[in-house]
Length: 340
Figure (tube, rainbow, N blue to C red):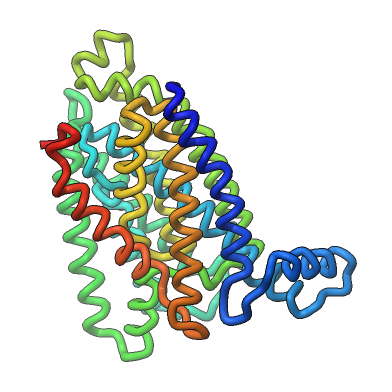
């Protein structure tokens, strides 16, 4: 890890808690740093004030969930860009986002949003998680043959499965009534307003799994940047690495979509920007992407709560509004970074 990458990671480590404190204090009811401290203190002494209830029951779980989901999406995006050897790749290319959206839509149409599943995780979230995993399994099976797994075929299969699940989802929406249609639309826009301790615990487990396993493939991802043949010459088990990377990303992104809906551009823009700053070495790119992804989603969720307070915008809309200008700027400057 070079000195520049270390400085970037250190800066992100300083900015992340600062952004979390600002986000906790922002909303329909503004709280100063001292009010946040006193509110948390009152909660721990079992005499919660209004500020304590706002912080511990609403804002802190939401900020933490935003950080966890952002870290998962950005790290998964960095891994997919390395696997596809394309800095414009996105985790949704393997069909997980589309499959999760279809799974959620099926549950919404069949049983509605009100029922709660085991451990208080909603059936909608469970449906999204299962749908995302099934879509990725299908994509991987289509891309696999006796000669191995083709990344190009996986990309094409992901596009096909995304189109298929989108068509089925549109068919469900066509037959849904107005209330169900609104619920599907709101879920697809993405949101962190359902944050609670159960969802937070689930997100923490998934985040630890993703952030604990993907860095173990940093050397393999670096080798794959040279090409699959070159990676094999370097002693990398390419087929095994590709399969494990796809599974890890599918679990991470599927869980993120299940918990927060479809949140655009975090997995695309964040690792892209971090690659230009820290370089292509995945030993520094993966942790930098995790920190920057958490930072971006915390800030985006804060903006979603304060732009038209007390009404909240879906956070997926905010990330798209932030991500699109960055993405267009990156496309315009691609020649300067060897991305023609």
